[in-house]
Length: 453
Image (cartoon, rainbow, N blue to C red; front, top):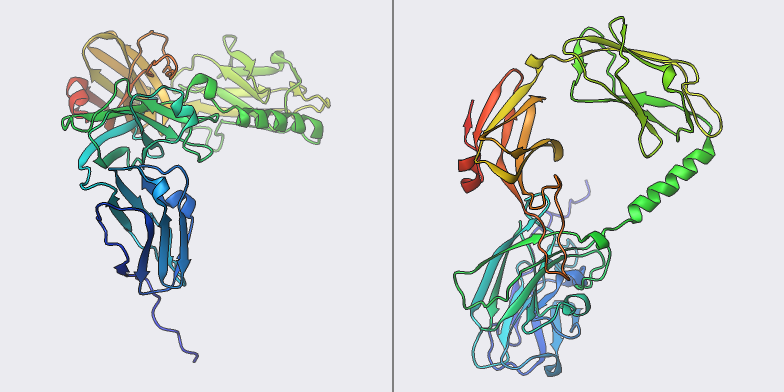
């Protein structure tokens, strides 16, 4: 047998020596050399290397055999300032790619180290969930809002599970922002970038200060490129015209089993855009009785037909699609078909009753798999959600200041914060023919609902 080569090397390189010791004072610039016990390589240095405060230009970083060298000219450094260098996962061994973590280096250009810190959290304003993808950024005060568009910050840190903490800060005032980037330049200058701002200046010497940031996308910054791409795709589909098929959300595998959700509408989805629709050839029956109240319309994409009605519980329905009920631009007709199904009844669902304070601005929203199921204002001390399919649900509370029923984004120029959503962390398990009572008064304080079943 050929030799196996031994066990795989899973140990990262070990740092043996630094030419200028870590935590040095009165640093005058120059080359800092890190010597390891293995041959090295650099991976993704541009995104992994973080130096705070940020430098006007990136320093030169090189690898030669077992040595890592970073060149910091004195012209790039500020006087009497504490710097911290973090290499992230960029420094790895040559053969197996095991990263050296953590690899940090701290020095000061003055006779002392700045020792103040600043911490906080960042949440997605629309969902109440931790924002785990944004950079938190500090700018020297005084400053103007345009600096956020044109300049990189002094201090920057990636949020970790929605939390951030800056250390080695001087006793100076800062403006704080956050940015979830699309072009990796640490400037607010592209569509689709998510931001947050703090209304007041901050000073790290205030040890009791814990910052809360709420990120959002401004209306004028919404990225519409995806919508345009979809539009082009629809046009291409109509030109093909080789087939005109469809599917429905009706389960006909067991006609006598209660499978259709009375909260739903019938959706007929086509593979091509609908050019002509004859509603008289779409017939919905409850048993043998024609349902004349059914509302039939085409969705804006022109690829879906929606059928809405007030469903009876535990009832048998049939949908008949007659010949030439729909056709595309090439005048290809959809084939006729018939679907028979049965609706669910009340005992197939669960319900949730929420105990709360009356607040005309508080919108209570119920979500399942991050999809909105239902929402109601807290206009009574008891708010009830009925006909809920079994599964896990979550509650989000919207402070709907303008009472328009939807979450509204913020505006940086006008210093307008977004409407805030509070997420109740603990999921609610809904079972068939079962009810949950939630004391939201306690839940809002602890972010965990108190359940009484």
